[in-house]
Length: 100
Picture 1 (tube, rainbow, N blue to C red):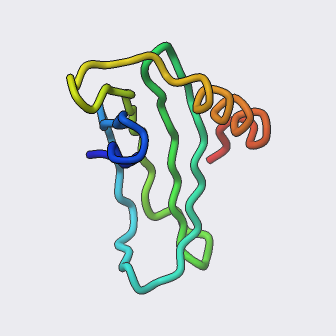
Picture 2 (cartoon, rainbow, N blue to C red):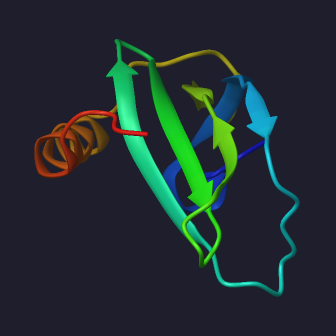
């Protein structure tokens, strides 16, 4: 699964691993709150903690995806590019720790 278009950047962010628990059904028509926090990031990969709640605040989905940066041509892992690393660090500083 690619989240960053390889046509613009020459790299992909591929899903390495993902776990998710679904507590309440949701539909694409409803309004949802989605909180995404960075749990860790290493040399080539980044992990997230995602919580999706319905308008009443009830937790519907909780997920723990891990993504890896890869070269689009060779499909081999690469170091997280500096501009993305800086953005991740800023996001972590702004969003704080996991709170469920």
